[in-house]
Length: 303
View 1: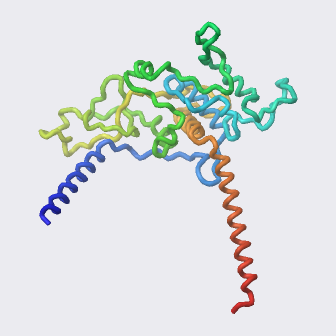
View 2 (view 1 turned 180 degrees about the horizontal axis):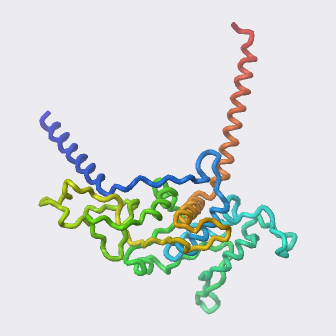
View 3 (view 1 turned 60 degrees about the vertical axis):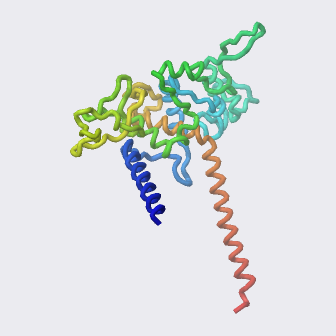
């Protein structure tokens, strides 16, 4: 019995320590935003996806790759640049099927605006060429080490599946873009790092000495600030991107649009999957009604 009690006490001590560590590094509750894709009947907003792609290309693509997304994916059904039929006035051949991303003129133009490394050629050398719909988004860096060197030792994560890799992905991305604040007086942020109330870091190691007691704990009349620090500078600012559709050019709008686009990148077939799910549910409801009606018909004379 004594041995069991000792083991139980040790386990409780470990759990208590784990709870104390977990308490450090807390963040503010994520900001709530209405996402068009939420719910059983939610679908992506095509205009918002287009704006989100613009934010990614003009801001995020300078540091972050999307290695799992090809240009042709933008023209798939449910994608930001899907065309059910060809626009008039472009002089396209009648045989052109614009619902096919490879023949979609918008996708071809977007892809061609990038330079893609290809080769080797006949001389064994790599060369640059305009992108094709089948090409994947080019990375801003040649390799991981180059990416780290350009970002102070921090590796910018690939954004292809970022919305699925983070808890409450779109809301996390949206909140993070809006979570940059001046650090509180109790902590000292290292040079070239930035304080964000929604970043799941740990500020306990940043508390200034004058706010610590003799045991290295923060003074009772002060609290550990939420959030953490990291090397990504605030990427968005008012008016940094011009929207052609007249949408507000604010940080909140940019953050919502790019979060929606990254959600689509992680779940490009969500609209089709939801449509199929609704069909299956409707089928099951009708089938259940037929089975119940058959049951009543078969047993109508049995009392």
